[in-house]
Amino acid sequence: MAGKKIITKMGTHQMKPVLLDKWEPAVLLAGLLLFFGVNLFTISLAPQPWGDEPGYTDPAVNLALGRGFTSTTWYAQTGEEFWAGNVPLHQITLAAWLKVFGFGIDQVRSINVVWVTGSLFL
Picture 1 (cartoon, rainbow, N blue to C red):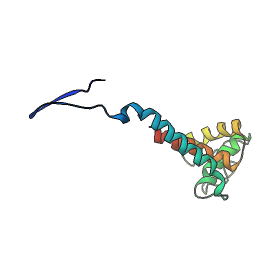
Picture 2 (cartoon, helix red, strand yellow):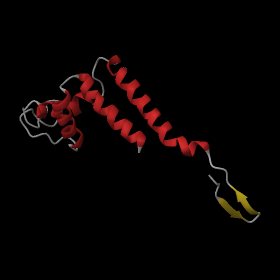
Picture 3 (cartoon, one colour):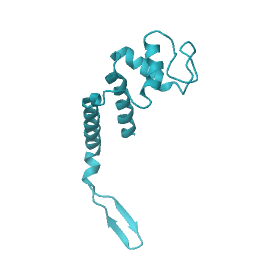
Picture 4 (cartoon, rainbow, N blue to C red):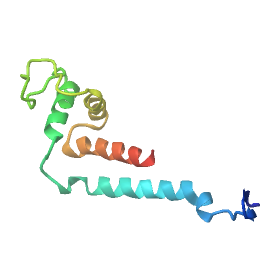
């Protein structure tokens, strides 16, 4: 493969092709698969829910289990009110995810690994 020519004030220079250009998709895929696999393998090492997990999971679980889009973890709403505590895209997607993969802390956390892996790809 011939290198590209660039013209500068000093003259024309030949650019050599970089080896990484050829292997970049494979390196990216291998890195993403490694990241994804390690995170799925270690997902249950933190056994207790922490941070925002209960607040963002409760509406999705209720929706997936047929109890409506409600939550008892948000301070401004009761469990009988339609949940409007935050933007609902994650909760709606998580509800569909739980219907496919079942309910459990590993299943709830695994969607976050998918989100982060997709973000790393982008």
